Image 1: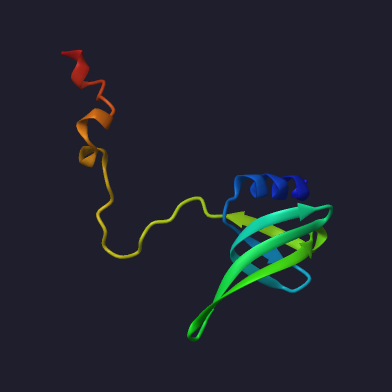
Image 2: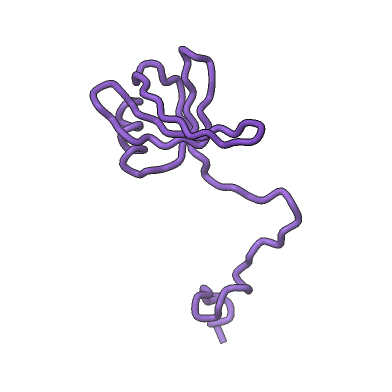
Length: 101
């Protein structure tokens, strides 16, 4: 079941968080770049003191304990979210109550 989901995420090219249970660590914001048999190639970046390092690892499907996706992100600082009134009028969904006139 997990191998089918990994294949789907590979085809979608989505950014994922992967838990490697044999190493007891998470790979943050990784991309699955290749699948060959039971080997999964994963690319990700780490940020250290003054440099960003890019990594590519090959792991076996059975060493993957969990895969998560970010569904949405909202900024923490004070930013007014865009609401429908801010959209151009041509893109706004008409209000059914206003059409009853």
